[in-house]
Length: 499
Image 1: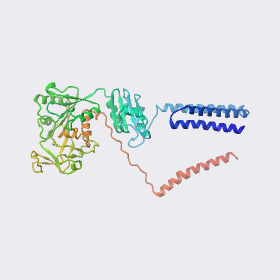
Image 2: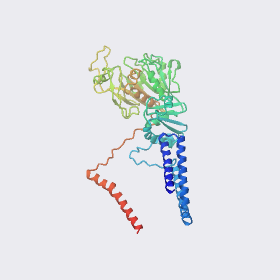
Image 3: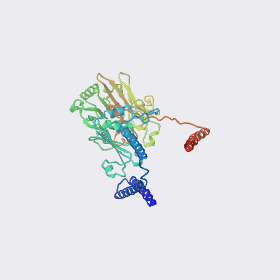
Image 4: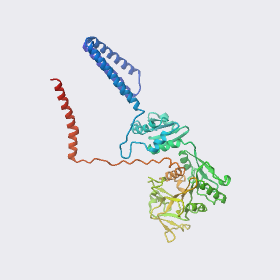
């Protein structure tokens, strides 16, 4: 009979274990799990009942009281540990001892999360095997704000929600707040914090495009239009509107950034005056021009120490041939590393039929964003179609894009000038880094880059170089000596207590 009781007890334990393992595999609790669990509990209950009945004398008197006291103490200790574990999930102290604080959020991020006043929902579409690394970062965000929640979604296991959000690739992150949504193709602290900042922005920022002089249209879907640019600006959570200064006569107060995209005719004097007033009132203006286009805008640009040259940039390096381009399409890989627009920017950009952007001395601070290579020059006599470097030309590097900043009474004006408007038209917008460069410029002038700027944290090389002899010493010390010492101490204690 005793053998049967032991078998039942052991079988009950394995039935309970099997039910839990089965559930951990398929994550679905079914009727079969209930059957195994109840059968296991009954078998173990029967075993415990018979065991207590046969050993009744052992569990009486002083031994029972001492055992009961010990059991109560164990329960109290476990309860205290559980309570401390529960409290520590929401109130804990962490210290990052890495030199560059690799596992800590930047101060800008922490400040943003601590003051987050509206709900933000994050949905990360990653394969289940990749959830751990993503969860570590999202846990840091969720811990610092009760208004931020996140959800990890495996697109293969939840195709309905994946299709609902229009997800077409793994490792896509959606950040939502109210009706605003931001999509990230790569997850990093910088990208995620910027996305939260944009979807929680109180007031929509508006990008105006000047019209009325044959400028490129944001509604034109042909290769020459700017419809792709407009869509990209919209994804940055800006509103896009058109502005005709002849009708409006002044730049509206709602204008965050004004874009002048290669006008084909001169501006009227009243329009020029409106632009001057706009800039004097801390306005933000982007000017794009092409060779053979009107240069009356230089009247305004000179006040900010900039001027669009009457020339054509020729690139004789031959690099353009790698992309099917000729010498009149210079490629740029040299950027100003100090400007927020081009810092850490390493992708090449190219500019079909571009003019130089020249600077002069004055009260404005001019930053030359991008320059051509040394094998380029500014050709002044290009009307005939035949070009060649001569004394009238200027040897490269040549600046094609620049930003001028000028302090005013209440703030500062920002003026970005590019000697080309083709590089962001539909036909070239998504090639190389053209789109990123222009969107960086828009964000900087809209003062989005100033609000949050987080650089990737560098990992220092702190390897421990050991000789073969040193590695053997470490092996014998850690793997052999310490465990052997513990075994010896345990044996000595055992024999001493059993003398």
